[in-house]
Length: 289
Length: 122
Image (cartoon, rainbow over all chains, first blue to last red; front, side, top):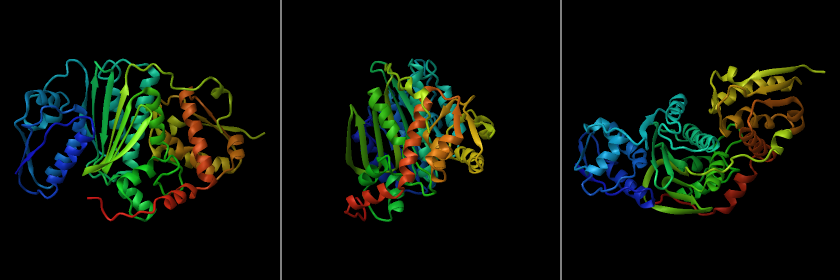
């Protein structure tokens, strides 16, 4: 069986292409699958985190997977971030240190994810940024990873990949879980069927969380939005048929044409940001409780 | 005057990153019995590098489900937080107070707003 995948950029079209691609893989088992990238002339490196679980799903159902007709530029991008390493393509060194490599973590591997982040300190993969921006960025990534652990029920774990764009001063880091998606969690919690977009709106309300054990929660996405609003970056969250984007203080929800399994969060930060990420000194004077 | 028990987060979780709900639960289970018996607790975040809200929700936010605002304020103190982490803790505390004031309020209100039902979305 030969499957085709076209350009994949950091936009809803890119996610829809991957969703449609995922749809074509669903019924395939115990065969050889050739993924033909002949018409793919551009693939945003961080989007490998979204493609990874789809391809791994093919392996899990007994298929052997190969990539064919890979454009030289795309091959370079996907080799630099190590995505193609296990498919017989020669490794490509990331001489400019602009790539946060493609990696799959098992769901409980907090320590592995922390070590991954620590290995990309500013200047060693991450661009120069203020210590406060670095701390705020990493905190939000850790919140997302914890969200995957708490809610995704992912069998394949969590997929991560990132790319720094020096000319734009932006860094995209994508975390995809291939789990049940926000919709399933919210449906189970509310006990009724709602759409992916309504489920995402529900989950993004800071007052809501699907945690059932009497623990408060639901802050992670609110904090991420506050951070990105200050930073001037962008958030994309894609879960099943729901697409959410927040940038420039505006948010939009769109229904996806296809069903992208699990939940993907892409965080794009403005790396040149010098905002102070804390309030004034009065905070330290008062009792926080 | 009641003695203060100092508890080091890094000792409890054996890690310099307070980034999981499981670790938050360990802290909660250690400090809640102390607060229950009226002991003052100083929770030290010295040696901790990274802290996330999911950890604080469970370690500290959860206390507001059992103790009044006044009891927590009188019996619990935190040290070793920089300004940014302190700001995070403040948000967690505000969120926990609102949550335990009426845990079902927001979910219920939201249920009322979205009447439409969906079998599937294809």
